[in-house]
Length: 236
Image: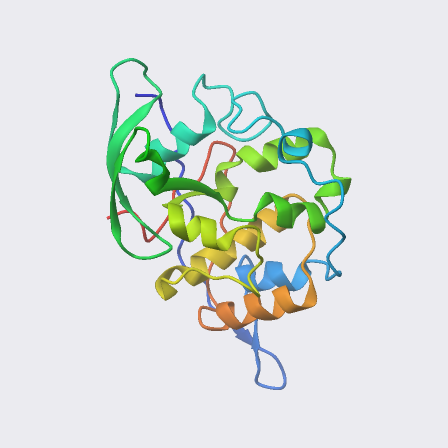
């Protein structure tokens, strides 16, 4: 089986501080601090959006994304990273045929089995959906960066297929994981992706993110370290 992206996210908390008014200030390195630094801008029109034309062929191994170029497509890299006991199908060192997902979006366990009618039970979600990225600044960042964004392990999570379909390209003001225990991690990932690729947030989206992060003020901003990101709360 191919070597998947494995570098762990730093998940230790940091102590917040207080300002003169006694209100909590976002600590250095936290998702809250990074959210405060994102530009707030109204979403652009979605005109011109084209999944393959603007973000490249799905799951390409030939991008500038961390982990790319390992001769395994991105979908199988993420399955290998996020499934428990992933097994390949014997025909390829890359293709993941089975495994178990502790689904971060619903909290349920999903038995993954590759095949017609079964593979879709586990899908690879873009944490910042590509359509959402398009209207929040990706129109301006260039083709190579967009293709990297579409295949960046920081922006990818193996998740329940129906939940992923329900999310579609909605931002945090319109959709959050049903599993409330994962919402802080999810929002921190969105903030990290938007920071990395110079994307913006709209006012409603920022408010929704801030409400989530208020419940976890010391949530660290995940960083990829150049070779990938392992999820917390889905590994045991």
